[in-house]
Figure 1 (cartoon, one colour):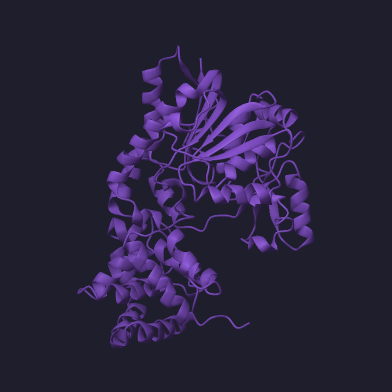
Figure 2: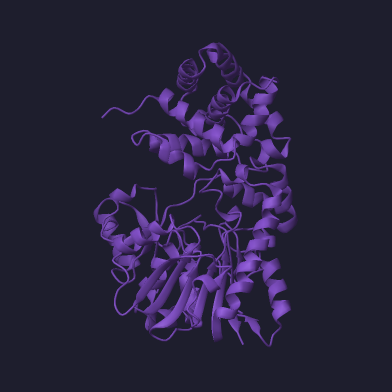
Length: 481
């Protein structure tokens, strides 16, 4: 089958950029793209959104009068694809043909062809702007680098918040957000081992490596010895190159799932020290079900998977079916309900453990979802923090004495992490709640995934893939005293 013409891909990618700039997420937009074009459109749209700030600055420089949205989006997409990727933050990128996904002449020609389909009268304008950028690329990139938007490809308010929250790491965090994330897998502990799966991948010509376990030392050993994953201290695998899941042996049969290493910390943290067999566990905000499935892979528990979005719960069912979970004697109930209103769904029996994976800005996973930075607004942080606090207050009474609650967000903003947890613990007092000393706290998406000694996170060991990074997360493990 012939590959689709680049002009068609650019046309749909530009539509995606228009949608994001209008407030719609790629998660909503991409499924509407014809299936045969979707992978290519996604790749182009992701690239464009990672370079959108610089492209906006250059467009304003080369064409001060803002063109219609359909034309501007095509220009921005093409400018992002022509952008040099050679240098990260802290230095001005320098043009280099090897850094760009398409030759200049091909990209310009196909962008003009797309313009003729979208808005024929603008084709000459698009041609002129792009050719001028190619001629003046170094000067344009230099000029763009002097603004926060152009230098970091994030809104200025986002850059400033990271600068305040992480004064020593903010530039590294912004640079990581513009890189392609690794593809990380979770091996089903009831079916295989990480090392065994890496060997199986090698038989199919796929290069991968075993990553550090989400837990270390005594915690890792105790968990491995006490759950269905006995003898399996490691189940995190990272691919050298991303692959379609259809190419992964055993994926359809439930032997492996796609899940970032930072997200894989949740289940082991909640399950150690070992829960009794049949312990009651609540997974609040469970959809799409990755952490739900990992809990059932690792322990024999009675699990309630809760989410306010009944449609998204369909993915939880799909994941459990593919993974052939639950496995007896474990059991699971999937329920639609608001975590802030337990009276509507709680049976009155306390839980031994609760995972609250609260809704957040997703600021820790923008490299996987580059549209997030353009969709969020400063007011969203306070609004989401209020929802997070409401959930925490509502679920805490459901926890049995001596039970544990793991509070998690995929955010690197302190307003969605350490700050609200500090406030909660202060309100509860040590007689009611205790933060476990091995709580990771903020995990930053840097090569050591460590907040410069400000968390309990362990740096990556020599067994981890070199240069590997995990997503940004916050974890607080709280015990009811």
